Amino acid sequence: MKVLFPRPGFNRMRSQLACFVGAALFLCLASTGLRADDKGDLLTQINVSRASMGMRPLNMNPILTRVAQDWSNYMATNNYFNHLSPDGTTPQQRAQQAGYKGNGGWENIAAGQNTAQETFNSWMNSDGHKANMLNRDLNEVGIGIATNGQGVKYWTMLAGIGSHSSTPPPVAQADWKDENTQFSGGPIMVTQQFIQNAAQNDPKRPGFKVEIRSGALRADREYTIETKSEQFNTYVRLENSLGEEVNGAQGNPNAKFTFRPPVNGTYRLVAGSANQGATGPFQLWLTSNPAN
Image (cartoon, rainbow, N blue to C red):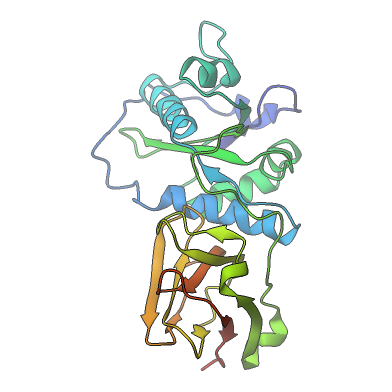
């Protein structure tokens, strides 16, 4: 049985909530039903939708993540399903009490969905939940998932507007888009930059100037990512929506690798000179390989 709620203020799905009748539920911390990457999968689905509408991605915030996880744990442990705690505390108040300095309180919850895709689809089919996920002002999110002793998953998404984001600033819109016309293969994005004019510092390699580009990649494609330079060695890495490096290469002088995404998602390319203080032009290529 599946139930879900947007945050207070939206129309609630009373018929589904009325059907949520549970015996005593107990949290099973060692449940094998919880996949390690469920949170990442759900965030990827949300950010793909946001990117398709020209919105910046949501970045994982550790405080919002802890609050969301604690709420999923509480609901699973106590056979409880509501945005308000029994003492009337709201999602925004829970975030503030945990030390979140931004404006947090946009919450979606669901129970009974087995996968991130099912949860995302349920929320997208509800106006209130969809509005939370596609709120243009939001930039941070926390996701919590808990499974009770009967194998029922409880999902919580708590989003906010962070004034001091703990993650690198997101781009306002996608720098590339892989259309169906690229199924036969071909360049999706080619950029040229003079390394000393690169606007950003590499957040993971202090002192190195880099070009950062973001966009959606498809799970049914294989991509070739490469840098081209005649004057210095280069490096490039690919990060997922959580800021985790999923692939990369360093070249002498050019760096190159192929990548097939495990899921549709928003990814970020970070490329620059491997020689600190180098000067001169270089190119960053993203190519969709022909389908097999």
